[in-house]
Length: 119
Image (tube, rainbow, N blue to C red; front, side, top):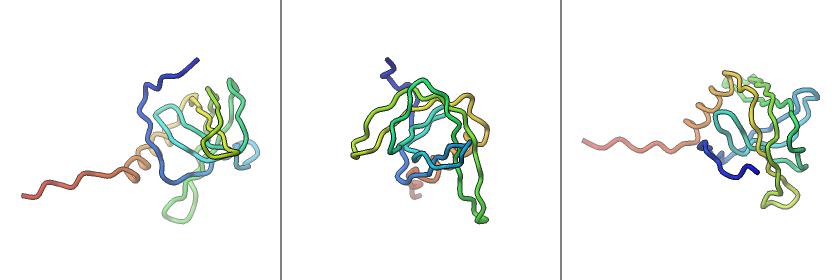
């Protein structure tokens, strides 16, 4: 069973909705992400070992949305600390370039940058 995480993940203090890209219905929220994976927080447990078609809708500065479609395999799922919620880990197959751009933008946006040293 997969228990050790080898890739640094970045926790997000706010949540972006994750949708089923076939039905366009919401299935949960983005909990964290890495270069080739993500964690989904959902009100229903996800089936492990199954491929999912996921969609992220990213708000853009012009009021539109950027859509990122992902194919991902669920590696694990367990009950969250919040009652009636589940955490599920997904491996992306493969992650599109837009996902890397999203990860970079979110990391920059939610990271605390050290202040420059005063002269």
